[in-house]
Length: 259
Image 1 (spheres, rainbow, N blue to C red):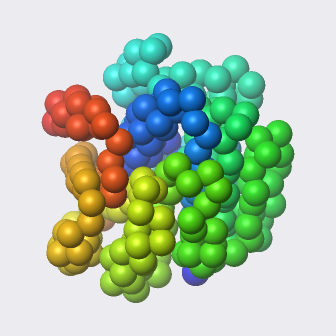
Image 2 (cartoon, helix red, strand yellow):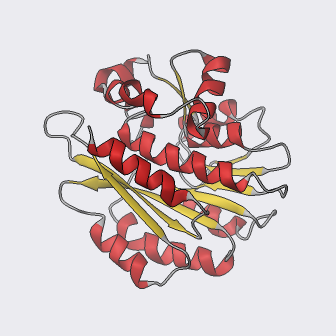
């Protein structure tokens, strides 16, 4: 349960997909002059360095953001976040979701971030020190249920587990439905891997059967990172999807299809 280290995968094509949509969602939500809450259930360490031995070993970042950075013009919110983080931390820095969100949010917004792994949580505290985020060394699903509905009530939650715990696929639909009942105005964004065996399919079918409000599902495919690698795509499922996100989905469809 505590073995997953995202540094091996930071900046890969799944991160590109997830972070591009997350950045667009937050960009839209921060256009209104009302504060919001950002919650994340599986935060990782928040900030990564793509020249670290672990990242270099897999080559996933090189085949990910390293190969497709020109997909995102300077005005794209993902590019803005990446540029801001690299200006502060160096050209090899890469923002995990918490740092990406913090770079796009405003002083009046609030962040609640959970990470169960002790060393990753310690690094998360360090990465988020200046952001005012509340960091929890706690199971992310428990944090989400405890904090919801947050203050401010406007906001977005990212659910982004590693899925090393195979029961996550079965428990997530009920968890999201409960969160939506408690926090009916909240945007809930779920990331999931697309594996060769299709483990995500029953989970998505169960989510669709819940008749959740304003859902948006987006999936992209890409070549495996190396021979035998089981992840061949990335998916995002939104509840109360922000306006205009479908346009970015269509743009990403074309870009990923050309890989």
